[in-house]
Amino acid sequence: MTEPAWESFLRERFPRYLLRDADGEERELHAVETALARLTESPGALTRLAELGFLLDPKAETATFLLETLPAFLRSIFPTTRREIVERRGGARGRIDWARTFAAQSRAQDPTLFVSTTPRRTFERPELILVRWLLDRVLAAIDDLHPARLPADNGWTRKLPEFYRAASVAASHAALRDLPVRRPAEHERASAAASPLHAIKQAVRVLDGHDALLHKPSVSRIARAVSHFALVPLTADRRFELFVLLALVERIDELYADAKRKDALIASDREHAFEWSRGDDALHLYFDQSAGHGHHDDVMTHYFGRSASIRPDLRLVHRTRGTSRTLYLDAKNSEELSYLAASHLKMHGYIAHRPDAFAERGARVVIVCPGRVAGAVRDIDPVVFVGADGCMKAGGLEQVLRAFLS
Image 1 (cartoon, rainbow, N blue to C red):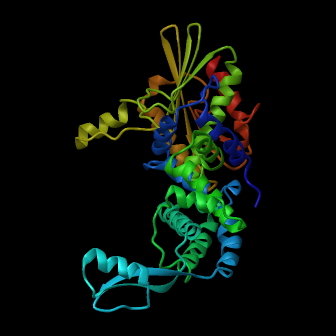
Image 2: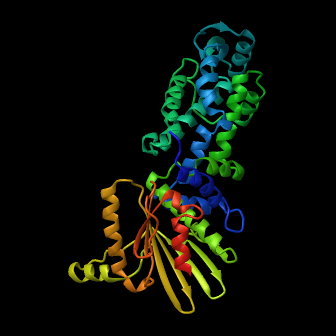
């Protein structure tokens, strides 16, 4: 199925916005992490993006290693034989090492002390220690992501259960199941890196990629993960809200081309998400924030002792020469007529909550829905509908903004 145009728009703009501010300056990663946690309404969003980058980024080679390289490699390896040195009193097991035995008896003054060597077949060698640790990291990352909780409309995340099965089967292979699960020491890692085997060289590269994202994060690797996977932890409804937000910002940037823009969506202590200033004019854009005290919460407080705040998805406030007027925008990710009709009535309630906040004429509220809207925006309607395509240049949203800012 073809991706909707608004999804394509958002996939391009949102990661770029997360990483850089209005002046093109790079953002600090802790600010990006805080913003993602707030937008996804759960902590650890940046870690989940790093895990997705480790598992799904084609440049990470994780998929190729798990599904193609590793199964063939495991069919080709055999155990090695090591001779273990055992010191025992009263007798010997295995082959007696007379040189060590005489030295031990002389040292301990005990003629019943014997040193013997016994053969033991083992798979414990540096390259397999590294492979076993890598499989553990894959399983841990998938467990942390909870694939069933990721948005179902991101079809490529369905690879994760397949990865989990492949990693689990490999970890239970005779060559790996009894190995200690531990991070390989530096000398073991260096030994594996020097291996002539393609599978081991690839395992080293995949583990290096994992560590650059999750163990000792590299800013460039994290930035790449954000660019590729920033939208994955977000639900479809939240993504549509962000599309409307960024489309609105783009339209205002065009209409206010000579204004200075400040971005605050990333800031944890923000009063508003965006600000444009030009002479005596100032525009403040609020995202998912209370509309302030008004008629509705006054009634609720009076009759029930508890207030119920109104939170439009977006609230745009134009302030100039001591006056201000407001425009609400609500993103409704639905094409169901009954739901949109109910939303129309609800928005009239929003207007009634603070009637003095709006201009006397023109739209007070814009409802944006993903489907195509047949009718054009009318100045006589306080609540208007705009389709996702109407948020693009020269669409219905721009028409509303021109009237609002005029």
